[in-house]
Amino acid sequence: MNYFPDEVIEHIFEYVVSHRDRNALSLVCKSWYRIERCTREKVFIGNCYSITPERLIQRFPALKSLTLKGKPHFADFSLVPHGWGGFVYPWIEALAKGKVGLEELRLKRMVVSDDSLELLSRAFPNFRSLVLVSCEEFTTDGLAAIAANCKSLRELDLQENEVDDHKGQWLSCFPDSCTSLVSLNFACLKGEINVGVLERLVARSPNLKSLRLNRSVPLDALQRILTRAPQLVDLGVGSYVQDPATETFVKLMNTMHKCKSITSLSGFLEVTPRCLTAMYVICPNLTSLNLSYAAGIPGSDLIKLIRHCKKLQRLWIMDSIGDKGLGVVANTCKELQELRVFPSDNIGHHAAVTEKGLVAISMGCPKLHSLLYFCHQMTNAALITVAKNCPNFIRFRLAILDATKPDPDTNQPLDEGFGAIVQSCRRLRRLSLSGQLTDKVFLYIGMYAEQLEMLSIAFAGESDKGMLYVLNGCKKLRKLEIRDCPFGDTALLTDIGKYETMRSLWMSSCEVTVGACKVLAKKMPRLNVEIFNENETADCELEDEQKVEKMYLYRTLAGKRKDAPEYVWTL
Image (tube, rainbow, N blue to C red; front, top):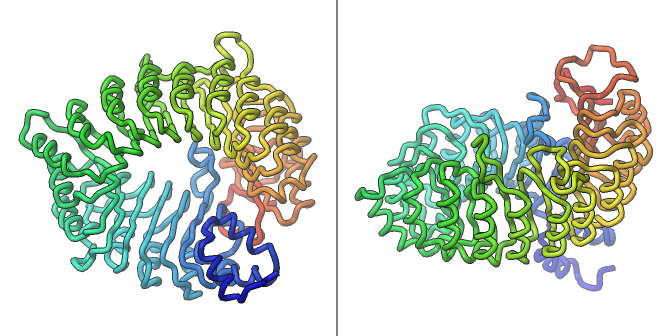
C-alpha cells in the first residue's frame, strides 16, 4: 500500500488529529497499522472497563494524552448507584509503571481519590493538563498535590465535580516559579479561596487565557484580577454582588473597557442583576455565554444582556428567560450554533419555555446544529417547523418536564414531530426523546436516522417492536440508553449480534428478566452483562423470571471487572 517511505507517511499522519480518522488509518494495511500505532499520542476511551491500561500501553507506546470515561451517562440522573465503580487509580498506577510520558489526562464520571492525584503529580514529570468532569471522592488535598508537583502545569479544569474542601489553601501550593498556567477553572468548588494568593498566581501567569472563579471570589477581587490579566479570553465570574453606586463597581466598569479579548463569559453564581451593565461593553465580542448557573438573574435582565450579544455561537441559559426572551435570542444571535436551555428551581414560575420559544429560535437561527431544551410542553407542529428550519442538527435533545405529556393542541403522541426531525436532519448523531411516544416514532428513527450514534429513551414505546426498529435500522448506533419503557426479553435477544458493534446498552425499569440476561451473556462472551439491584447482594439467589432493575451491557477486551460492588452481578 505504501508508495512513500515510512518517514513520509509518519509526517502525513501528524496532520490527522481526529480519533475516528486515526482509527480508520490503522485499518488500511499492516504497514499503516504499525505506523499509526507508533505515532498516536492521543487516545480516547469511552468506557474504562472496555480495555485494560496494560493493553493500552502496549498498543500505543507513544501515548501522551488520554481521555477516559467511567460511569454510564445515566449517572448524571442519579440512576447509577453509589459505589458502582469507575476508579482511575489502577489506570494511573499502570501508566506510571509503564513509564508512559503522560502529559494530559481528561476524566469524566470517574472516581478520583487524593492518592490517585498524588501519584499523578509525581509519576509524570512533563504532566501539564488535568481536566476532571463530573468526578468524585477527591478533596482539595489532591488538588494541592497537583499544584505543588506539576511544574509545567498549563491547565487545571474542574467541571461539576463533588470536591471536599479542606480549608481552601490548595492554591497556596502553586510554587512562585509557576508561570505556565493557560487555563484555571475551579468554579465548582464550594469552599473559601485565598484571594490574595489567587491574585498573585494570576499576576505571574502572563499566558493565562481562561479563568473561571467560584462564588467565594468577590467582585472587588474580580476587578483586581482583571486588571492583572486583561489578556483573558474566557472568564467565569463567581460572586457578582455589589451596589452599583459603590466605588468598587465604578472601578469594575472602567476595567471591563480594557478587557477587549474576552469572547467567552460564564458563571455569575451569585449576582446583583443591576450590576450586569458592567458586562455590556464586552458583549459585542462574545461567541460563548453560559448562564446555566445564574439563577439570580431574572428573565428581563437576561434579555437586556443578550440584546448586546450579536456574535453568540453558543448559549447556555435557564428557562427563566421565557419564550419572549428566546424570541430576542432569535432576533439578535444570527450566528447561534448551540443552545441549551435548563430548568430553573423556581417552582410555579410562569416564564418557563414552551414550543413557541423553540420555533422562534429555529426561524431566527438557521445555523443551529446542537440543542438541549427543557420545556413544559411541545407540539408536533412545532417540531415539524423546527425540522424544516434547522436541517443541520447533529444533536437534538428535548426534555419535557412532564415526561409523558402528549401534544397539548391535539392530545396526540409526538411521533410525527420527532419523525420530522429524523427525516429532515440526516446528519443527526445524538437524539433524546421526551413526551408521549408510541412504537411509530422508533419506526421513523430506524428508517431515517442513518447517522445516529447515541439514543436516549424514557417512558416511551408500546412493545418490543419499538426497540427492535431502532436496533435493526440504526447501523451506526453506539450507545443506547433506555429507562421505564415496556421493552423486554424479545427486544433484548432478537438481534444480539448488534451489540458487538455498539459500545454499550443501558436498560433500567424495563421488562427484561434475569434469564434473558443470562442467555445473552452465554451467547456473547465478549460482552460484559451487568445486572444490579442496590437492595440485594451477590450471594442472593436470582430467579430467571425475576425482572432486572438495572442492566448495563458493554463490549470489552478486559473480561469481567474485579472491582464490582456486591450488588453487581456480571453474567
